[in-house]
Image (cartoon, rainbow, N blue to C red; front, side, top):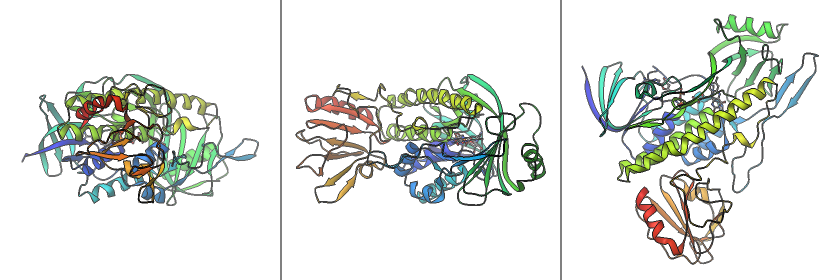
Length: 488
Ligand SMILES: Cc1cc2nc3c(=O)[nH]c(=O)nc-3n(C[C@H](O)[C@H](O)[C@H](O)COP(=O)(O)OP(=O)(O)OC[C@H]3O[C@@H](n4cnc5c(N)ncnc54)[C@H](O)[C@@H]3O)c2cc1C
């Protein structure tokens, strides 16, 4: 029997991107369905690095403390040399928090834990993914999309306004949209496996045969349990035996002497590295997010992070347009996110090349704090003085004091699905409206202290995703009003 249902958004794929989008839509009260063809949640640790900018996103989505409790810092790497010597080195830049950057080091959380925490958050909004439900076809007629899905209970037809393909690197949605996925195969194949082992301590990340691409092998202790993540390049052709016996033989061949004893394999995969970027992120009423739009080597830990941030960019725009904002707002999703992915592809591929030479250092370039949307059609900068924080930039955190005397973190005031208008000293008040939170900042304002980038006599508008939308001097207040009517 075929059942027919209506909703606003169908999200195909309940990985990191689909779950993030679902949480964002749920907290905005948007009706959606989140489907995944897997019978149960994905069990692998693969994307284990949560970068600082993604930690900020997860703070806004209400899960950062649960993630931090489930995860831990990146351990130092113990590099073993062929001559029997070894060194402990920290190749990840770990900086202390500052007021404007509260997260400055990657957090290590196995991907299955991150996704479980996102699912818990979704459950708190009364939603859950529909597992065992596969998108089999869809048709976009301009006004909406008719999606056909197959599940345990039979076939279903879902009518929605928008379909989002969050269905991973081999995206069915991208294929059906006939969107090209140009790029290259990088000639590197690797295994990743979550294993229980004996013989190595859990204080460091063990790297053997460093710098030798044919024998390299790393064992990273995953926080929150007994698992290690084994990563190693393998021959480009041929089968790889990922059973306990197969991995034991693999490890023994690279590390003789029975140093490591593999006891259990919880999840394992062999994959070829690619760098590819979708030609388009949107066709009609259908969008692509996450690995469906971009894939690249895991070096630098960018994939999950970029996927989460795609979803975070799209979520508020979909909600706004479904709520009555001009549909043109949705054009800015591809405009803003595709260049970010293009840059990230170059970064991850460059880091792969360095890793081939044994250089595993990672710095601020992987933190994603410096990414932004300057030059986007949503960035209205009428201050025009090239200041440190301008339209399109990530809004830094700050500590101000409320007129009641208590300290307030700016991020706490920005958190939630709304826009935030900060009104500089001397600029006339602006009336709040649905979806807009207004704060006057100055010696006699509701907020006392200074906010980065805001000068007296100016308005600073911060988007729901924490980027500055507009900086407008009071003389141009009508430009602020027309900006607001284009997004609210
Ligand atoms: C070995 C490895 C190591 C990695 N390390 C890192 C790292 O350190 N840091 C990092 O940031 N990233 C890393 N990544 C990348 C990261 O895992 C991905 O970028 C991330 O999983 C992308 O999330 P996604 O939600 O876009 O796609 P996915 O996680 O692939 O989820 C897609 C979902 O869509 C579902 N689906 C597919 N087709 C259909 C259909 N027709 N109907 C219904 N459901 C469907 C699938 O079942 C799947 O659950 C790594 C990846 C690999 C392979």
